[in-house]
Each structure stands twice: as structure tokens, then as C-alpha cells.
Amino acid sequence: MIIGCEDRSDLTAPQAPNTGEADFTKFVSIGNSLTAGYQNASLYESTQIYSFGKLIADQVGTDFVQPLISEPGIPGKLEIVSLSPDIVFTPNSGFGEPTNLGYAAPYNNLGVPGAILFDLIDETDFQQKTIARGNPFFSLVLRNQEMGKSIIEQALNLQATFITLWIGNNDVLGYATSGGTSGTDAATGKLPTDVPTFTSLYNMVGNALTDTTGHRKIAAANIPDVQNIPYFTTVGPQMGAGIEAAISQNPAIMGLFYQKNGETVATGLASPDDLYIGNLLITLTGGAYAGLLGDTEGKYYASIGETPPPGIDTNQPFGFHPQNPWPDRFVLDADEIVITKDATTAFNGVIKSTVDANSDTWVLVDVNKFFAGVADGGMMIDGINFSTSFILGNTFSLDGVHPTTRGYAVIANEFIKKINSKFGASISQINVSTLPASVPLAKTSISKESNYILKNTPLKNISM
Image 1 (cartoon, rainbow, N blue to C red):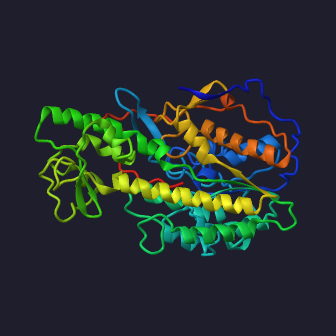
Image 2: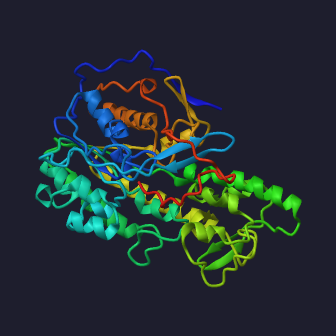
Image 3: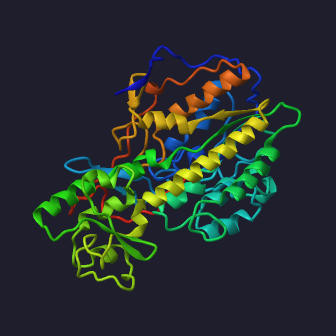
């Protein structure tokens, strides 16, 4: 079923658009990698130029300077090696470089990949923070404390007249993409940010950004449900089908065993759907090792360069035996799904409350509702079908978390719709079909030794 059919093929570039009460003279975007224009697990110029903030800036004809990175990005972007008979892709081994570090003012795009809500107000030295967090983007994007000691301060020092704010995703996504093994809460570091802390921090951000004169306007987006993204919905069904086939050939196989908090859990698989619908979500990163199910030579631990934990017997079939279970980091089980959903609901309630409390100058962009609609049947926009299917769905890039170029354009249009409605503007929407749709292809082919969804190369947990 396709819903939300929308055809705007006759749209052209806007001419001096009416922005109503919204003043884009100094337009700043605040957030994480979703704001930065991150695609294919990387930040690089040929896709940064399609960040949703830059697309909005182009529609209203205002300057929008970004921290551009040369090819193949930081880190090297994911590239497709082959699509048949299986999808195989791998990170580019190269490393891009920043091209405009010397820009003499804060960037208009203050999206810092990996940033959590706390990072917006944190005044820790950017260089020290980059080292402590193992994240190069704090120093690459923010650069100099003299421009502002925090992300919020840099935005205010630019005298921003309009701001997009999209933050909080990583306060739950980090927990989810780690399979529930790590998080951002202050007490344990193994759960999403606790709701009282998130509430306090978002209120602080809201108070800092709100202009008491009413001139500065803010469009704030909420957090989409991680269960709707292909990072969690791609591998499970295929693994489930493979396990079902293995069970039919070998009655001794009892289904998938996986780790959870140091203990082994039996899934009791009844059908492939058990690895997708409300029971277990297998991460896209875990797909790199799906071909090792049943291995009795310890190839998984050898491939990641780790010693098997105490109690693991690699002579037992990998993933099919309680003494050699599927790794916890690649599984989001039913309990952990509830934790992510509860955190997302609570965080979105906080965001809405802040917008409602500043309703004269703030507007809410309900990204969560929009992506739920994309997941529930898809949408046709400008003749293009958008769904949450991996690669073929047009919405998400190869990392399964961040949008494609056209996906960012769809998000930009959601912002534009709300800005027009709230502030009496008439900004033209972007004709999504005019933007590039290609995914990166590796220049040389790589032979594939196993039936993996991904090339057998360990990938880091993905954050926004």
C-alpha cells in the first residue's frame, strides 16, 4: 500500500520567497549527525551540501556555511561492492580532510555527529572533548572556544534570527544501536538518558534559545522511533529464515541463543518473524556475522580481534548453543525495545512541552509521526516511492540510520511546511525528484567469501 501521494513536479526554484514572520538573515541549524548531513556512516561534502538545513537555506536564499569534509569523508564512507546475489558493502579505507577550518565565524550548521543533548550546553574544551569521546567532530565543527564555549553559545554569538533544533536522538539511539549494552544515563552508562535529566537539559536549551523580544523563531523536531529504521529491520527476517532452514536440516538446532547482561537467553524461534516483529531486532552491524551462525572454529571472535569471554566455548556452534551465543551487542530484545520506546515517548513529550510553552516563537516538526507513516506503507512524493526498505526504499542511506539525499529533502520539506503554517510564510517546497538518488559504489570489486548481508568488516555502533 502506498499512502500520501504527492506530486509537485512543476515546482521551480523559489524567487525571493515570503518568509512571513520568520527572519532567515542569520539561519543556524543545531543538532547531531542528522543536522550535519551525515550519510553512509560518514560526513563528506558531496552529501553535506544536501543537509536539510542547507536545502532550507537554498529555498529562502540565505547564506549557510558548513564544516565541509573532502572525499571519502570522515570516517571513510560506506560503499557498495555488489548487490547480487547478496548485498555487500564496506567502508572506504581512505580519510577525508576538513576544507574550511579557517572560516572566521561559527558555522551556520552546528550539527555535531554523535552529540547528545548535554553537548549543546557543555563548555568542555573542544579539543579535549574530541580526545575524551574519541569523536573528531567536536573539534572539527566547533573549533575555537573563542567563537563560543558551547554549541548554544556559538549559535547565539552568530546572532541567529532563525534556528532549527533537532537533538535528543542519540540519548536513546546509542542504547539501541549497542543492543542495550551501553547508554547515556549518568547513573549506569547502560540506559538511555534518564527523563528528569533530559527534561532539565532541554528546558535549559529552550530558555537559552528563546528570544524574549519574539524576533528569533525556532523550529524544533522530535525523535523518531528507532524500530522503524532499517538498521533494526533488515537483518532479522533473513536470519530467521536461515535459522528455520537450519532447524529443518538438523533437529538438534534449537533456535538462536543470545547473550543478555552476561547470561544466555534462548529465543525459542517458531518462525522467521520472531526475529523482527516485536520480539528481537538484529542490528545491521550484526548482519556482517550472520554467515558465521553454526561456526565451531571461533571465527567471530577472531574476526573482531577479541578473546572469547569466560564461559564461551567456541567449539560449540556459534549462535546455536548456550555456551557460544549470539553477541548481546547485536540484539535488541523485547525488554530493550520497550525501554527505547518509553524513552522516545518521554523525550518527545518534553520537546512538545517546551514548544508549547514558547508557542509564539517555536513550532514543532513531528518527525516521529512522519517516519511512522513512511514505515506504515510508504509514501509517494514527486513520483518517488519512499519506504523503510533497506537501500531500495530511497529513504535511508547504507548505514540504515541516516537519510539519503532525497530523504533529507523530504525532511527539509516537513520543516518548510511547519514554518509556512506557523509563521505565515510561503517558502516553496523542494522538488525531491531533482536531487541525486545514487548510493556510493566501490571502485574495485571485492570477492565475497560468505553469504553476509554486509562484508565481514566490523563497524562501529552508529550514532546520529
